[in-house]
Length: 77
Image (cartoon, rainbow, N blue to C red; front, top):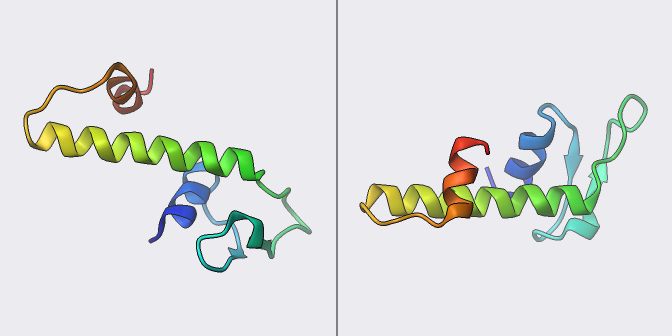
């Protein structure tokens, strides 16, 4: 699953959408009759959070120190 899809699913799983070329502006929502569109800002925030979590996991697996942001992302603080 790619970054945009993972971000959207982390916000609300089961959404119906498509997009092209990793472009947030190209997102088309297919379930707007029952749900609201997720804002590009919310999706970008979720993508950034996933990046921080991936960085933290990478560092943990190599025994490296985490930043406070990475530690918070992993612990949900």
